[in-house]
Image (cartoon, rainbow, N blue to C red; front, side, top):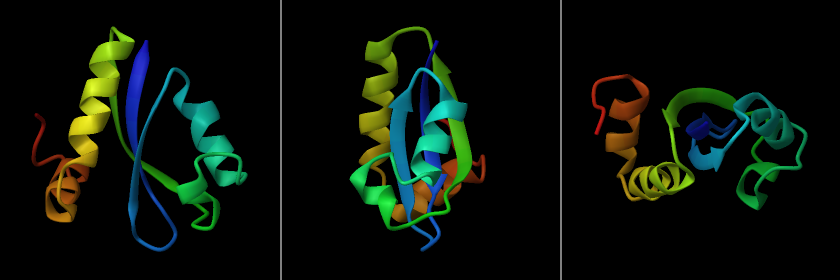
Length: 83
């Protein structure tokens, strides 16, 4: 399976990513081995996950979430919207 995830960083910002192993990827971010963006913003908290059957679908959704405004991401994380 392929997953799109949203992390809330220690500074309150959101980071969106793609992976095939959410638990491993979150651990990498927390260890400072994830994306450059999250390295100085640890610890991170997993706040949203979506599962997809194909890499293409997951990466398309990742791009869509990254295009959302802060307010739209907050609604997504709160469960108010699912596109």
